[in-house]
Image (cartoon, rainbow, N blue to C red; front, side):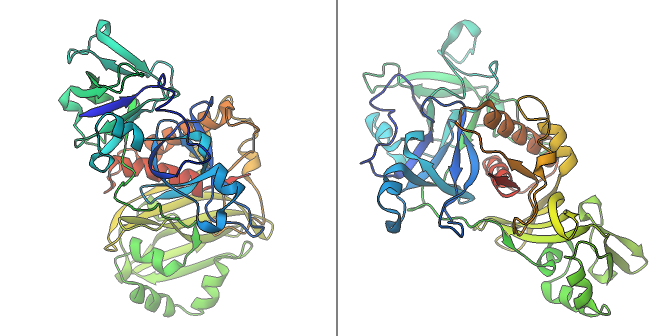
Length: 446
């Protein structure tokens, strides 16, 4: 069963106040905003500030906790720390969050028994989440019609149904002045988190299921992308351990010098490895290719650099990235392409995919995205372990259509161009978290 919080209940659905504790699940709902909000890093930069780090859509649910003790004063009064599935984390303004524990208690629900949350998730005007009076799901039977900018939340108390279920039974608060519940139904096939048999996501759905891991006592701080090495990346794309990779590289003449040149912009370099380490050499290998019988060749042309990074740390998976960055004279300028491997806690690969610069900018092109958006993505000397794919401009006011339009197109790009029919051994909820992580890690937020 489910329960719905409606926007009309000011007392129950008010934002988190100055004296309120940041604890438990919370609804992302910007005050007077459109479709979402910017969040800030929970890792300070060299000047002690917390830079912008990413974007969260309205009606998603995160787990919040108070900032650490050293962040007292005005910072503590303004922000809550948040975490989603231990994949992304940061700081959100209190005015953009609605605590859900009290709402659950008011209708007799224990928040620990909530299996997940459902919220209107599609920003398109004609893609609204509808609640029906009966399981006939008829147009003349609609009792509520909700969009992504409406303050609405559904508590999921049972495991996810499949779209074959047809009508999904829910309960909602019909009278905001009385915390009582009334039965209703939603169309199960409109679940945006549902992964089809071919591995693609039901991107046209009207709602999404959020499972922000309520069993975590406190929200974790997830570190930004960290520099990695060639050996660990090769471990996942070649059928060999790190020790074998190092041995194979060590057998190459002047291997140390050759590997160093892989990170120099104007140097052209080629390394050949034995085929005993060879795996499936498809297009996902980026700059790798077959060099003949018994060999695999790794080539870096002049004007590019090879980059390796770790993104995210969690029990279920982490990302191992091999990027190719284009150079501006002697320094990297932007990310041209990245091959990303999802590595599980048992060191088993859970799938891999490519993010491509040209495909990305084709997907996000069009008003209100500026015409020069791609050109402005080239910034040098940012000292990042992985060069930026795009640069998000700083726009006054989070209600700008740029932000929610850009995020929606990033999500569409990930669904259609990155995930597509690829078989990734992660859930639909984790695919959404992965989209947030990619948008955070491959972008530079001015």
